[in-house]
Each structure stands twice: as C-alpha cells, then as structure tokens.
Length: 272
Image 1: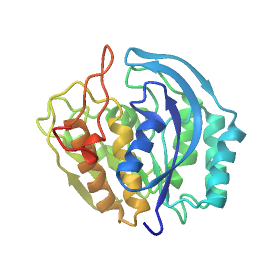
Image 2: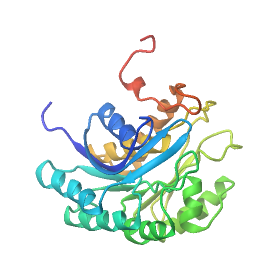
Image 3: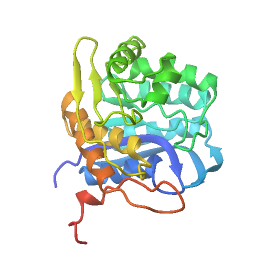
Image 4: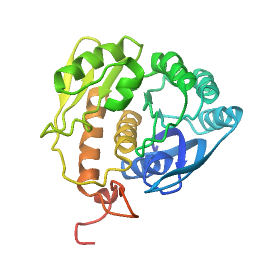
C-alpha cells in the first residue's frame, strides 16, 4: 500500500458504538486512512441516552496526542467530545506542540451535547472551546444547536445560515461548515462552507429516516480523512457531505430508539 495516511480523533468513547471515536475510526477505515486516537472520556450510553461518564485526566489526553504525533505522524486531526475546559486547554497546548492547526489540518467538531440532549460540558467548557480551539481550527463543523451555543444565533432558514457562518468565522477558524440537518422543514439538506469571503453550498437529499446517530461525527471524520489524503478544504467538505449522505441512506435500526448511520456501504454489496 505504500505510505498510508493517518488521522487523529480526539474524542470520547460511545459504548453503543454509534458515535464518538467509534464512528470516527469506522469512517477513517472506510476512507483508507489509519486511525489514531486520543480518548477524552468514556460514556455509559445506548440508544436510550447517556447514563454516566468518566473523563480522563487532562495530562493523559494531551499525552496521547503527543505520543502518536511524535512517533507515527498525523496527517490531519479532529475533535469530538472534549468533556471539560481543563481537557480543552490541555488539547490546545498539545496540538500546538504537535503543530496541529498550523502545519497539520485541524477539524473542530464542537460537540456540546449528545443527540439525546445530555450536556457534555458547562459554560466554562464552551468558553474554552470558543476561545482556545476555534482560532486554531482549519474547519469548524457545527450543527444548528452548536451554532446557537457558540454565537447566540438561532437559525431557522438558509439565509440565517449565512449570518451564522459569518459570525463563526469571526471567532477565528479558517473555514466554517454550517450543517443544516436540523432544518427539518427544508426539503433539501444544504450545508454551507464559508472561508471569510466565499460561500459554497453543499447540496444533498433529505433522507427520511429516524436513524441518524453518529451522522455529525461521520461527516467531520470523512472531511478529516480527505484532508489527511491531501484534499483541499472545499474538496474535503464535498467528500464529507457525500460520505455522510450515503451513511444516512444506509442507516439501520438498533436498540430501542435512534439507530446508527452506516459505513457498511463502503465495504459490502447491497445484497450482503
């Protein structure tokens, strides 16, 4: 295979296997990228909700980042659940030492709550995310709930997505990708990429399924995989959109409530 590109996920573990670092590693694999991991927290969850959580010590999180960066190399990195202001601070410092966000592309997926509505950190954590990670980000990939938490803007239509992208870009990331999955009344699912001067719409079908657990993680990790493989940010964003659209289209039920999106479509024929 020659040199295999690598990507690092800095995220929490989902015991249900649908989201978090499990979704990231599945996506990396099916995109031809070797997955590296810095675990931030272990959650006790299933399709019914998040029942408990244990956060790792910040120095252990930072140590994981620095260990793999020093020995194995990181082609691109992404964040998921970061759990606390203390962990976010440690991640920012470790990323600086590993040149993530400067020489190495850095995707910040600002996960602030679980899909069940369970908060994943407090206001101090949100402030640390806003002040420490967004200025280091190559791309930030919020959904509309995360847009509101980061900027105070409530988005109810496509035009407001433009306003939100401008407000987020002012916080320091090089690119903003506003995801439109929560605009339920819109018959399409059109995400928006903004670089400070140009808006790029990423159209997609709105797929009628309740099984969307892990969609945000999968899109951000596919985008990260694209960057690790040398794509430009716009091309990586298109790739991420294509990947997650197919993953949602092939989602499946599991458990009592919302099932996971699927990476199987990249691996197996339809009839398997």
